[in-house]
Length: 496
Image (cartoon, rainbow, N blue to C red):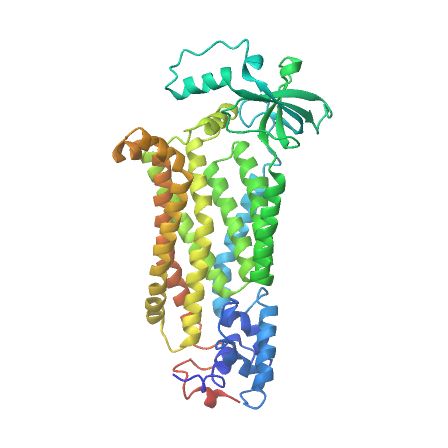
């Protein structure tokens, strides 16, 4: 197929789809033709012929204008399909969006519930501090009252105790820089084998224990990492905007909104005692609607991606619920979950585990469904004569490559997060069966496999939906355009 006959033909096809033959359809139709910024110049060129009315003399200037205009409206509402099909999609999505909104209103927590601090783990009062002085001292002088350990010197405990008795320790003077005791100083002794060493002038996080003796009320629990973290976040934001431009900016806004839904709705609602599964479904649905439409625009292809993501999330929820119950996974496997359960005993910890599976799978699902929908749309515009079956077969070949890479990525991400735990099992010479049977690892296995099944299922589901939607739009539009057959030879007869 040569590109030369396409420009005078595709405009009439799209005009028929939009249903506005007397208006300038080029700018409004551009997002439907491919609102992704990654298209080669061959894609915009045919559509720029709409501005030129099929003429060849003014095409270069019209083409450049259509390209710039299309990018300017890439995030705005688009009309990529017929009016009737848009009504069908709206009839499905509007009630769903309304149900999500009502669910958020009903479950809105109004803030996390208060509790009396235990002073354990993360449940401590903290302030900021700075190391004002640091000196080397003999460990014997600061550990004179310490009872020597009975552990053998060949063990890690024995070597640590020996270093504490004979090595060089650091005595740091720390000044509290925030809170009611701002300006107060205390002494922190750092052992030679401690994993966290302090430096002069270093900013630290200090814990406050009001019930302890005055000299022991403050202690250093961590270092202040706000500056490097903020700098890294700034580099990330700059890279996204620099490469993605307006689409990258909208993606950052969607990311902020997603974290807002997570911190202002999902977490406090779970702490208030609401069902974690219901909260996760409602919150994940809200994040999905906001992120997808904000990043990709109010178009039919975005709506198809939303539907595909929704179906996959429902599948993940059903599978996760079934296998978490069947495997007797409690969700209470470490100190942090134990602290949560101790502070809020009414929280369903297994439901919290399932909520984490759903929310964790959502981000990758968005990527898969949007990619598959865009693939179907682009294949349709490359060859409008393809039927739904041909479109599905062509797009599913792309989806198979995506499945292989995404599943591998998901498994490695979870394995990397659990790497210290896997190292412990390796040190203990545990068999693979015993490792997989432990609840700590079983949780990660269920989380990974359930999420991967949802990802795999999202490819055929989204591809089939997109193929049906884009093919159902071909038999004409409200403007009365005839059914679309092969592109060649029909555009000139319909062109007026």
